[in-house]
Image (cartoon, rainbow, N blue to C red; front, side):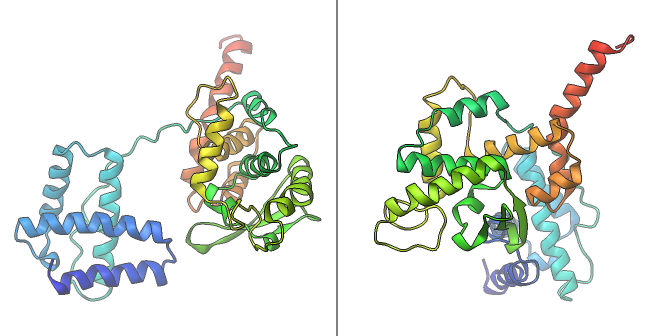
Length: 298
């Protein structure tokens, strides 16, 4: 890749970070897709600043021939479109070659979730008399009762939790903060963890993070995932479950109990409400079953 074109992608990355406030992971994804596109252009001897719409179409066709998923194709289109809009805004181009490029329609898969009974079974298999299991149960409780992402839970600090108002200040994607409530059960187990577990794990060490590891630092995402799998083996649950499944369960159970979509969107920290709409699948299914069962023409 030539230096000037490398610089174009670098400038775009800086724009995503500074102007858009995107996370490092999101910026990495953009760069990954753009580097793939750039490699294709190099093989075809096409300059990045001379790209035409047909060049982008041919790239996408080559990706499709490689059996790339529709979801990946859609992500690549977004990356290329945002990149060329940036170049046009920066007066690097007179016209945007992506103007007439359509994003492939992605069929969103319904996220796996646990039923209330499965949640109760899972949490019931965790021993609160063990200081580490008490910590783990506290993490899982917050993932489920507050709908936190695992990264958000792991990065929580003591100062982020307000016990009196039963709220947490959460820093989500792109560094955006939101205030999330937690319930009575979370309050009880948080208190128990802070009194009986956290001091024992830390001993004479200090740590600003809420959830601490044996080493006295914050507990990481991979550890939480591994621990969750260990507890799942104690249950009869056969579903594929990750820490994110608890967040999906939180949203699904709210929608099932008639919470409005906008409120769930705020609690989850979704920027786009279309992301939240996927959780209406269970509510719609339940309503259809009720209609079929009770309506005279159901």
